Image (cartoon, rainbow, N blue to C red):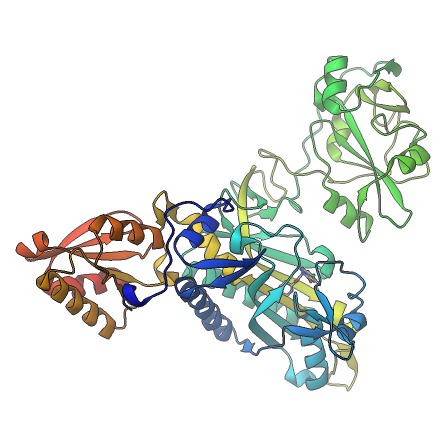
Amino acid sequence: MRYSKLLIPTLKEDPAEAEVVSHKFMLRAGMIRKLAAGIYTYLPLGYRVIRKVENIIREEMDRAGAQELLMPAVQPATLWQESGRWEHYGRELLRFKDRKDTDFCIGPTHEEIITDLVRMNVRSYRELPINLYQIQTKFRDEIRPRFGLMRGREFIMKDAYSFDRDEAGVDESYQKMYKAYCRIFERCGLKFRAVEADTGTIGGSFSHEFMVMADTGEDTIACCDTCSYAANTERAEIREAKTPASPGPEAALEEIATPGRKSVEDVAVFLHVPPERLIKTLIVMDGKGHAAAALVRGDHELNEIKLKNHLGWASIEMADEETVRKVTGGPSGFSGPVGLKGIPVVADPAVKSISNAVAGANRQDMHLCNVNVPRDFRPDEFKDIRIVKDGDGCPRCSGTLHLSRGIEVGHVFKLGTKYSESMGATFLDEDGKSKPMIMGCYGIGVGRTAAAAIEQNNDQNGICWPLPIAPFSVLVLPLNVKSEEVRGAAEKIYEELNSSGIDTLLDDRDERAGFKFKDADLIGIPLRVVIGDKGLKDGIVEIKERKSGEVTKVPLANATESILKMIRK
Ligand code: 9G3
């Protein structure tokens, strides 16, 4: 392709609305343009990257035995009513009526649609397992779309759905997808980790997220420095610390006035005790009238997802003032475990080893000192309900967990029978017995994968594309197109590369060298061949690697051969 013919509207300045590097460079490199909040046009350069990511995904999904199909973006409400999700989702689900006043939505995902398709077309155990996938545009009406393609409202997703006859089957399908995902992200040239993740509200029993390591990632993951354990902090477990052999003598319980001191920090300072001597008591509720008390050490944070899953609640939130007063007898900010009754009390194990703790007295402006377990209170149970911290013990080995940030580009779920039961996707086994199919679902954010690649491969001048997903592999850059010799050499190399099957961009514009170099750095083509009069006098051209900046001078005659060697290494 010739640069002068392509629509690549590069920008000199950082657009104000771009908060992360991938958003900034996708706009500046002329890859995307915003149409509306969270809705983007992929311009030619950007769409070439999207297509490369899609093709890698296709090859690996097909290799894993999945079959590609394409489902509609417009989905009838009736199927969402069958699965019970029509009422469950709020305004994130974009709904509308057609001319006959029938309810539809723009698909944010396709569990209902694929389950309907399979329940009508798959009947026997002989047809299982089956894995169907699509690469298709989704819509999720995020309240705050931002970061360009990283958190858009309309986005391209590869979503796959597997159907098996039993647990062993879905485990096999899950493993096949897990391995395919590892190959996909390796082939995209990304540094990634698969981490254990929460299954969220879609049900199912197990899931892994594929995280591209990047400081701008919105997710935090905990990785062990010794074994392969890695988990999203929403789910990461913690090895229980050994309680001190003989905690100090238990002093007598006493009430103490702490006027207006509610937060851990204020109470700790006021009473001259370190935060780890406090018991933080949080009253939570599920919005259906259930309440519970969660106890964590003063310097720890409650992990609401762990607690919600442990309590088996569908949702969880901090109790409102009225509920706090009802269940503790006192105002919020002064809640404590002593004397609590009528609600389940779940304590993080770290609470066990606090001797002579400080806790709320369940009375306005009052705290208790020298609270000891089990003398002064007994929680219903001890359970890991806190958010992991850097340096915590690994739950699988004697190693240490370290936190880092990641961008979720893929998510694989063991779904179970949530949809096959509610929608009657059953099969007949060898004995003619009807059973619900066991499902798995597997997603990859295509645009987000491209954006994550930029987050992980850039410098102050622009993008440094990994070769497999670069919009072009080679940029042929003649410095002075007015010179017949320079232009001739550039055309020759360009033709040779194209006929060798290398997607090559020729910057044939009549512009100053500096102008062309700025664009070349910005759009980030991995290899650049610079052809200038000076070089040609010595019979050489320069090959420059965008990522390393390394320059190799090669004789004009074997420039193409040298480039092919660098690309195919
Ligand atoms: C909705 C809306 C947003 C949603 C969902 C439904 C996320 C929803 C979870 C999934 C699970 C998997 C198949 C591919 C991989 C992910 N956001 N999820 O179900 F109605 Cl508005 O999408 N689906």
